[in-house]
Length: 266
Image (cartoon, rainbow, N blue to C red; front, side, top):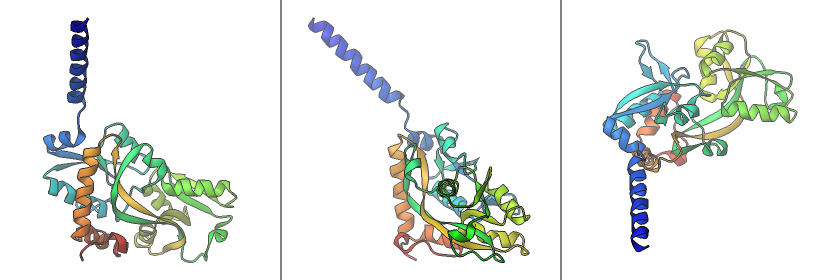
């Protein structure tokens, strides 16, 4: 009986150890491969875009490149849209999402977030020639939005509660912006920075922020169950908030500083 109990305990221990060994740690895998797969939308200037040489650029791109450089890693870019950011993590297509990912309770149920590295002002923007001062001014209007974004959720909920406007959904930010630039949409719900880009692309149709939806913290996204990777990213974010590098990247592309409570040295 004693021998049987000892044998069973030994088998259980072996299974436990075997399970521990088999449980791959994503941070260890990344460092061993010397490569990190980062999902970034490259069609939402100035956070992510392609330059004249078709090279990725933008505030999220610079953030990702600085991270990879500091960790001694090569980047494998994973192109994404607003709707595919979280699925890219869940299906192991990407290790980290750095793509204007707002922190929300709903998203926190399915992925893990790092500490914030930037912030986003979510607004409804529209043609400067159309006067709108508040939500009531949007009644009877159609607002374009990128499917699966926080703006989509916010507008859907408000429309259900009698908002009095219609929601037109596009598959990604690029097609939504194109709709605004070409005259298919007079109102869009997105970040304040993207709203200001409409007039740059088509000076005949200058847009401006009309109504503030909310201000979100932006964080990096990681699939559930990778605490070592989250801790490493948080350490890096804290360092680069403190030394002012993340603020410098944000200001370079967005024209403003990060919120005061997120700024380190200048």
